[in-house]
Amino acid sequence: MTSVESESDLCFNPLDPASYREPYARLAEIRRRCPVSEALPGHFFVATDGDARQVLLDFNTFSNAGNFQLDHPDGEVDPPTIVQLDPPRHNLFRRLVAAGLNPRAVRAAEPFVRETARQLVEKVQSDGRGDLMAFLAQPLPSEVIAHLIGVPAEHAPDFTRWTAEITSTVPRSFHHLQSWADFKAFIDRLIAERRADPSPPDDIVTRLLQAEEEGTRLDDGEIRMAIFQFIVAGNDTATRLIGNVVHELLRTRELWERVAADRSLIPTAIDESLRHDSPIQWVMRRCTTEAAIHGVKVEPGQRVLVGIGSANRDETVWADPDSFSLDRADVVDKHLAMGSGRHYCLGAPLGRLEARVALEALMDLLPSLALAEGFEIEFVESAMMRGPKRLDVVWEATRG
Ligand code: HEM
Image (cartoon, rainbow, N blue to C red; front, side, top):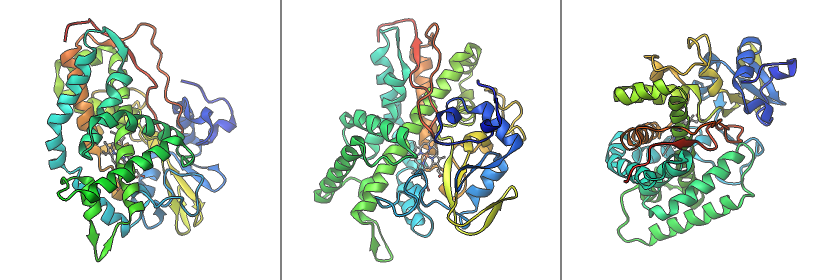
């Protein structure tokens, strides 16, 4: 971890790699000395748990317009996605997407998740070494999303590739990327095929197509963005969560042994990882009316960057916040890694399920798993996301 060396380190500039590469020492200093700071002109970074909650919960004062997008403050190129919508439009989108992610839908998906994780691990069982991001953390969420939107698993590698390129580009605009053009073409084909299907399956895509409320239907642009958001939101975050939790457990081998011996600790390990290394480090809001956060005045139109990764290390909330501990009894209810309020993550049960099943498959099939000798973690080069670029691991090779 780097140390804070100068006054200029007291600002979190979301576009400066020096701010996000090794962020935690700098964020601790920022929380202590200037918890609300103007990170870029007209953009306020909020670093503490209490201030982050104030912003996330007050959706009248802090709108979601332009969330995840720094450089299109006015007039979007595409219709907004669900995380960029405010009520009342947000209510309709949320109901539609939630139907595909509710506890019943997630329970129904569990056998598929389990079987997919088992196959992915079995495929490498006799290799004795590999990059866990490539053989499990990336393909598992992609294959699960493909399954949930009813497309063959052969599209999953495209989802992984498109999503990784797009999420490493946000909060800058990604509309010039080939990945975005390919993604759009794929979704438009999917919509056209579904429209032509006389008995379409009961899933998220069909529900979005059939949705009608108070006489209005979603137009094709809105449906495209809803499917896009669903694929992107469900892919990268879960990949990073799996990478982060496996890395922390293996880094201190006793933790891995402890969880392997008592699997009831898996949910705590997952939520402690979400807290300790939040896959989404900050989200954005736009101020709608004059407001004050921690005594700092914010004007209408100005933007607020809500530092959920920083809030999750707030020392006034968490004892010894930089340590990864399996003994935080209340970790699930207290962290902000999945957001809070109206936009609370709709995929939280699915993301947690994927991480749990991934850990169980590894503990069952590769019990001797360890970090490769000399492995040093490098995080993905991204302003908003946090997770390993690769995770080199070894194990005792066995025949699958
Ligand atoms: C596993 C790790 C995950 C993390 C850390 C995570 C994090 C988040 C966060 C922080 C938000 C709130 C954004 C905001 O307030 O601006 C959010 C919203 C959302 N997430 Fe997740 N997510 C995860 C997994 C998933 C999965 C697996 C899916 C779907 C398959 C998903 C779908 C969504 C959707 C649709 C929203 C928008 C909800 C709304 O705006 O009402 N997420 N997520």
